[in-house]
Amino acid sequence: MAAARRLLSLLLPLTWARPAACADPPGGGWLAGSVPEEERCTVERADASLTYSLFLQRYGRPLPRGGTGRHRNRGFAFSRPVILRGFTDNSAFRALCTREKLLAAFGALPVRLSTANTYSYRKVDVPFQEYVEQLLKPQDPARLGSDTLYFFGDNNFTEWGSLFQQYVPPPFRIPGTSPAYSFGIAGSGSGVPFHWHGPGYSEVIFGRKRWFLYPPDKTPHFHPNETTLAWLHRTYPALPPAQRPLECTLRPGEVLYFPDRWWHATLNLDTSVFISTFLG
Image (cartoon, rainbow, N blue to C red):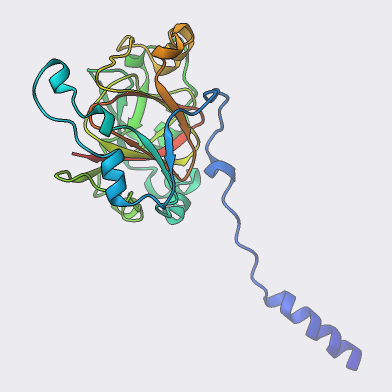
């Protein structure tokens, strides 16, 4: 009897023990890709020791508006991209952005897709589940940007509000601007060709995202309906070293600050989940 009681006392903790929580799948369940990274990152990096005043001095000064020629271009030396790491913790936001959790929460809701070209965009509305399960595929190198649908921006902040409330944006603000989010998910090899707009940040949540950047006074050679992947295969290899862009690959937890009016193109190396904070 004593032996039976001892055996029961050993088994009871096992009976009442809770099963361990299942860990999220690697990469959030999103498909990994095989698009190559750059040979060497040429964008500066900064850690959490960077102060706000030093950020503004080195990277965040807005360019002067108006003017022409070299007078319009004054200020380039004080405005350049930088990759920030360790400034925010978005682990809670990342946990909500796995493939399984996003489909469970938002699968039935419509999302607005844009074509992946420069200057003109066609918009298509589809259920989020249809986009993820049928359209979210690796980029076809032969497909034009106008035929490539891309989920980025045009977000419904009412329907997706519970997700965006969990995002912690970069702490540095540019004076005279206000932030606006753009959330996106795109397949391996997809991206947006060269374009420019106001300053902002872009953070990778899952996957890897390669960036190419030129200052405002160096307009890149590209076709507006050619995808970034096609440009990388056809134009990039022939560029002399002095004509190559600044470039780097962002990984989860890294944030790129892109300055005002800098030309930039993006290339998702994996299926990527990302969010940008535009400073308009």
